Length: 210
Image 1 (cartoon, helix red, strand yellow):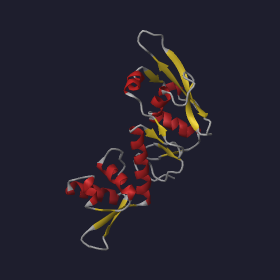
Image 2: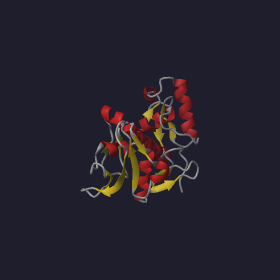
Image 3: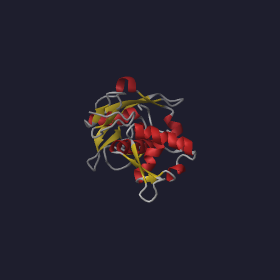
Image 4: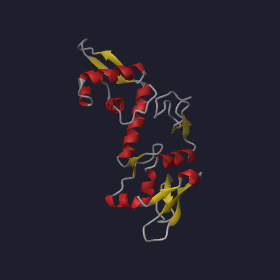
């Protein structure tokens, strides 16, 4: 099952199981239709993400648990969900808030992150085009902050936490740049997705990593 699990019913089941083994009846809080739930459980089981065993208390009921492969993929899916909610972690560092306000979201429409030519080893070039003003071009670098952690730093605002930086964190290309810079990537042989160095299974397609 080489598919992107993020946002799918299968992905939601895996993330739900991170809190521990669950009875099939408990999983109906994720997928209400039992037929749809059973189909997805069978798919996940055949792909090695979960196990389904009979309950010790009742052999007509089943307990669903994550395998080692399933737990890693589920954790990666949860991390990806946190990014979409405005939170991110880079290699276990403190959680970074990347949430933009309504005003900042509107301003970010004026930014162009020049991925095609300007994602380098330690910085990315940004063009800010505000109507009625001359375009500004500046760089966002990877630098160590006062706590010794690598963070994005905006030369325009001289800041690790300005809205330019938070907007940049939202791009997978920028996150991958950070991981490459720290030498912390492992490329999936199936889909070529860049995973953290300690990953055993691809967080994009679930393939086993060497």
